[in-house]
Length: 340
Image (cartoon, rainbow, N blue to C red; front, side, top):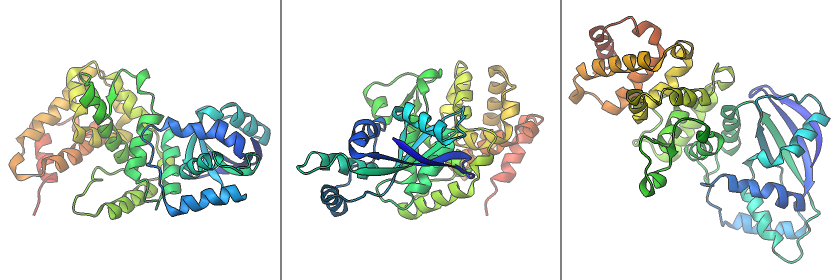
């Protein structure tokens, strides 16, 4: 793959470039990358892609695809270094934009008259963490009906995070049904926490709003939340959970979806304090939260909504709430849950 230029993306603080190769190399090295996303967006069998298939056979120049990489130690400063990095790490790439076109290209390659030497261009992105990569993926795919922001996040939650290296087990709903593992996390709940982290908002589901409009709202929240200035990334949240997973109480508390959603948002503000706590100290804080929460008149409030909001509030301002006793914390919660 030949790289033409190198530039900087100041929003995600990443490296970008424009690359060229041919259809043959693309099918051999890049097309297999779509298999990394096991729950890939459903392949669309539309008139548009059938037309594109015919155009490929006729020799059209396909619009550029986007190929991305995550590199913590990004020492790429020159065109030569970028070229070496891309060609040496091509198997570690992610397709941010162009999955349908790649699939169409593969179908066209099976037909008579296909020219494997035809040139094809790629936009290259290297980001230093997964959150920024997902941010860019959502901005690229915004408006495409085939893949909603929630779908993108659930897919990349599974593919970008190496849960096997952590002391927690994460299972899809299907895996939990077929072969449940005791004390495993739900992938769907982790993805909801990731969505909350990216939007800085715990209320990202609303059955009163039509799905398409809700997706627009979610994209807007993600774009408005400047993740480039975050002191942490979502992996830090997951790693923290794994570190305290030996405490059954902490594990159970964090496995409650609404607790985890609130925790994922609040963590960014209190991570320094949280990282100083051992599991016993963390357990005491979670127990205090539960005791204060149960003092509320639970029959009069929306349990899920306020558990998300109060867990966020509690974790976000843990330094302050650590000084309160259960009754004082319950009074704070009461004030925050007053409804007209």
